[in-house]
Every structure is written in C-alpha cells, then in structure tokens.
Length: 306
Image (cartoon, rainbow, N blue to C red; front, side, top):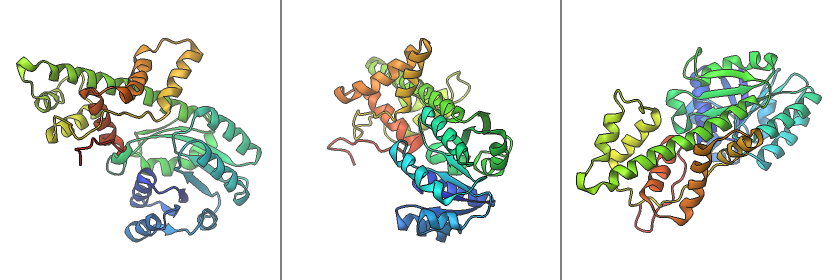
C-alpha cells in the first residue's frame, strides 16, 4: 500500500519511519523542507513539495493521513484536500481532535463520497520503537481498507490497534485515555512528593520507583519512565513546576459534566495543572518530567536549568 502523510513532526515523522520499515510506501509533506528531505534520505519516503504533490503520487483508493495540530490547522487542511480527492478515497485524522469535530467532519466527507477515519494515537516519542496504540473510528469498509496500515503502525499485527466504533469513537476513546493519564500522573506526583517530604527517612526516590517496577500493583510504563528520569536527577531543580494541558483533559471533564458522571480524580488532576502556574511544588516538576519522558513534550526550565 501507499499513503500520504501530511505533517512530519515528532509523531508524524516517526510514524513514517515505522510505516516504511513495515513495507508501506509513503509520500510525505511538511512545511519544513528539511524534515521532508531527511525522511526521504533516511527511510526512502517519497518527498512531496506540496500537499497536492503528495496526493498526486498516490493510486486509488488514495489514503491521506493528517498529523496536524487539532482545531483550525486540521480544519483548513481538510477543506483544501477535498478538491484533490475523488469518491472512494480516505482521509485519516491521527491528531488529538475533539470527537465532536470528527463526527461533523466525517458526515461532511461522506457527503462528498470520501471515507474518514479518526485515529486516537498513543505512544508518543516511543512509538517508533514500541509501536503505536491506535484507537480508530470509521465505517467497517474504511477500517478494512486501513487494516494493513494500522497493523504496520501498531506493536504487532494482532494487538495494539482496534476499530472501536463509528466515526468519532476513536477520538472519544483517546480523549478518555488522556483524562485517565492525567489522573495517573497526578497520583504518582503526589505520592512521590509525600515520600520526598518525609525527610527523617531520607528516602531514595530512584530506588523506590525502581523497586515498584517489579511485582508492585502500581507497576506501569508511566512508572518505568518516572523511575528512569529519577535515576538521572532526583531534585529536578532545572525543571520549572509548570504543567500545560493539551486540551483533551478539559474535554474529558466536560464530557463527565454532560453525562452527569462523577469524575473527581480526572477533574482535580486537570485543575492541579491549572494551579501549577501559581505554585512551586516538587510534584509539578515530576508531572512535567513525565510528560517529557513519554511524549517529548517541551518542559519549562528554571533560570538555572539547562
């Protein structure tokens, strides 16, 4: 198969690498000509000078995968793509779009005879090595067409990807996933800050988090990343206690309100991120470090940090 990848940032670029290594041909475009040239040289990606050029390199049914910021950048690109495509072609939105937008876009594209898949994509900067967890929403027909691509991106052909429901279901599932992620991160940050605060015991957080990784009920990939980070620097003095939220945590809390479902942990985890802009606690440094470890998200450094 062959597809076009539009957006070759830290996620899109690594997805191209994994697809190419899985035998999928990719035509790639990004506003950064350097990103395009690098992937063409390293992975044999077909370089495209524009979105139209990338589409022109495809054969029917043409598949265009977008890895762009949610909101207006994705909206504008979708509208620019439609005149370049024909009935039976497929657009995939692999970014963190609001599921309401995905439902609306899917309905609009269906009127044009163009298939749509919303792919909640998890794995961060480790997806190239470990594979991506893909939660996709689409019709059965579109999901069947996309299966070889999903299998190449996932940890294996049999696991790590699923057609979870109709259009919108993929981004909805990823939204809740990220809300849960907020709660897990907040819990680790609070617990480790309590351990650190018990100065009379002089606890070694690197030792304890490494200990918990083996046989403990709380063992997880998030704990693995935290333990690794603490092995290098327990003080985190160069990390500013400022933790952004990506939007999906907010949407999860709004969904809880709309459904009338109590979600106090997820809600408070979001509010603690808001509060991080006004506080200077160790826990916020941990949260920022975790975000950087799994997703490569930028951290805000203190004046003395590197």
